[in-house]
Length: 431
Ligand code: F0G
Image (tube, rainbow, N blue to C red; front, side):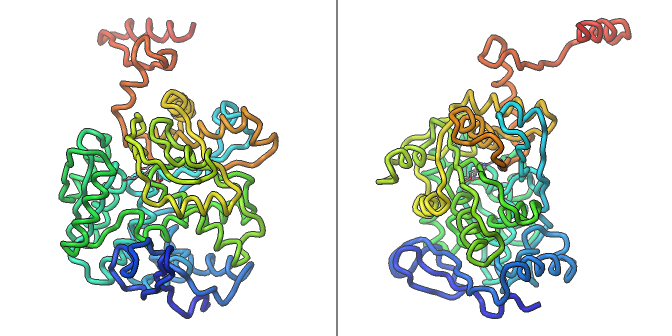
């Protein structure tokens, strides 16, 4: 079915200058603004467009398997047949009574993006960005990262046979992510600075060295990340929840969610838009602070949080994220590290598990419910952005003896190699 006949253009968010879908410039050549991919309206809408995604599932093997390329017609139609796909997406919507009960929301659903091939939602954007890099003949792909983007870049660059270059903040990337990045073979530059410094540097390097940038300001990344929303709406039979809650750092994902919802409404995929909620860590919450001031301006800051994935003080996609929150009558809030780690302990103990930053969404749900913003009976989907194994080191900090979370401590038990010793342990657990 011909859903799209014309290709999208890259359009500057600030001055509306346009360029074609093969231009490698990381920003607008006229004014330096961020570029968005603007799709011509699909030829079919509503039920027919929804049905076309189901058709796409069956049409080609690569689309069948990928929860990103299934939506290729409204993501990157020019590249569907040449996708660098693992595949990715098709992540579960999980309900667990214990987590809903803790958050105070019956039927709380978790969209677990940790089920992607490299263990985070980044794979959805990266499959599209690396596909684009190969399509335009880039010599290498590069990004700055708090760890997940670099792991994803490394995997997709390896698959595409391209050089991958990543800039990461020294001492601030969780072990699982660093290990992946190195193992997949990306050249890894550990910068003596924070993520914001890495992002500044990689943009300068990208411009002068002709390397294709795949940070979340890259419009193709955002197109891929839209599919988190499209897929969860499809899983809910296109009946949206009242609330959609996600952790936020550099704000690329908030921007992608806003674009997905705006397009879904405009093209009749849904008739009502959920309220988007971005949750930041209290020590890295410039977006939440700006929201409190009615988004008058952004004050950047030096970030500090145990949730290293979102340890970001100068979010690059601020303007787009403001539009996403305004366009969905959304909210922004922050949670302390202890609130985030408490949520993580509940998610982990329910057998679901996630990395610390991911738990911010559930911590945020609990807060909004406690203050009565989320009402009894509201349907809520919270996004878990990364896998539990991403940050094994955090367990030591969560389970410190006499620490704030010592009641959750689950330390290994040292036993003699005898049945009697094991029986003694079991008996003590029965009590
Ligand atoms: N959750 C996780 C697990 C992340 O890795 C990130 C971002 C976010 C949430 C926030 O998403 O930046 O789009 O607001 N990680 C980036 C990285 C910065 O480099 O991996 P955002």
